[in-house]
Length: 129
Image (cartoon, rainbow, N blue to C red; front, side, top):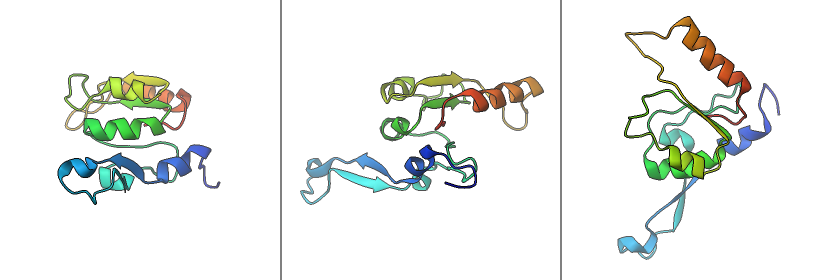
C-alpha cells in the first residue's frame, strides 16, 4: 500500500454488490445481484487518504449495501432529510456515527464547525464515510 492508502482502501475500491429483483421482474435470466462501481452510485474514494468515502444522497436500498463497508459515518445534512437512514447504517455494523448540519454556499461553516469536522475525521475509525 502506498501514498497513504490503508487496508480499508481495497474494499472501498471494489464494486458494490447490489440485490436485484431477479426473476420477480418476469425475467428469469436476470441475476439476483449485480456489481456496481461506487462512482456510478455517486460515491468518490479519493486515493489520498484512500479510506474515506464521499457521497451525496443515497437511496435506502443503496445505503443498505454501502454502509457495511464503513466503520464510521459523518452525516453533514439535516437529520430530517428524506435520504437519512440511520437504522440502515447502524444495522450494517457502522461503529460510530456523527450528524452535523454543515452549511453550504452561500453560507459557509464557521471556523469552529470546520475544526469539529476535522477533529472527527482524525479520530473516527476508518474506513469512514
